[in-house]
Amino acid sequence: ISPMGTPGYGELPYIMSGDKEPPPLNVSFTVQGAAGDVSQVKENFNPESGVFEILREGERRFVTGGVDLFIQARRFSFFGEAYISRVDPMNNARNFSSFGAWVQADYVIYKKTVDVGVRLSYLNPSFDLDDDLLYIGEAQLAWFVNAPHLAFKLRYQIAHQEAANGAED
Image 1 (cartoon, rainbow, N blue to C red):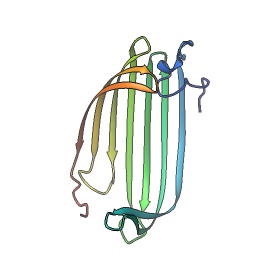
Image 2 (image 1 turned 90 degrees about the horizontal axis):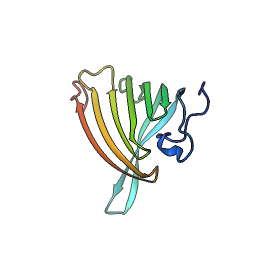
Image 3 (image 1 turned 90 degrees about the vertical axis):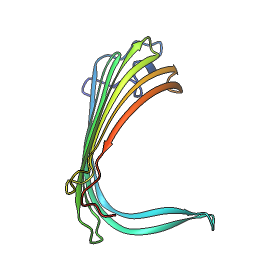
Image 4 (image 1 turned 135 degrees about the vertical axis):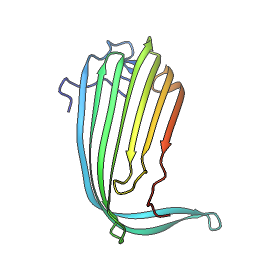
């Protein structure tokens, strides 16, 4: 839903607007969800036979929902997304719920070619396990030579993932 009209093109609407007037203030958001039964499989490559082997792991039932938000204001853009999910493995394993979210903001600091940005992410893979959280922080300096086709990016990321107490090996 975009109550203020169509957002600018791409993830970097100011840079990708070319010679046209940069996109004005705009807000867009979505709400989505899915549910169903899924057959889980693993695919492993067997180097001796040269083929992929499909290993069926059974079915699982899931329901998930999410929201996302996009805000653009000329040189500035912001993205954010969050989801919550409930999974029933259907193979005598315990049901579990998870939550994840990320936000990202960037600002064009020079003409339509140099951009700085930050991203923060959070994941709780299972509400039932203690100490299984994942946190990520990332900073980026980008030079868009020919957006979106050619860019040079300098990124730094720091992450912390806890070892899940109670997880099965």
